Amino acid sequence: MTRYRDHFPGTSIELLDVVPTIAMIALAVYCFRLAPRQPVRVQKRVMLAAGLKSLLFAAILFAALFGSDAVRMGVHGAFWFW
Picture 1 (tube, rainbow, N blue to C red):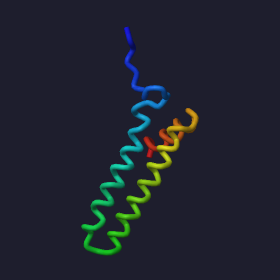
Picture 2 (picture 1 turned 60 degrees about the vertical axis):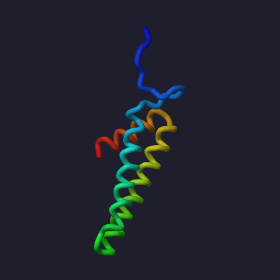
Picture 3 (picture 1 turned 90 degrees about the horizontal axis):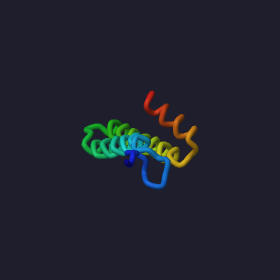
């Protein structure tokens, strides 16, 4: 009997470890799509800044996937707490 595992083949990365990265990328895409539709220039800039910040968080979360288990648990724990 084979046991179901939710790890990516050949790695110790679990499926739920990737969800925060995907969520941040989706948020960035949403912000970038809404930015041109904002009526005021300041609102456009704030939406673009929020999109860039989301991409930065996505990059940090993605980099944590390849760190040690302690780093991955700490970064993802902070994400889920936030």
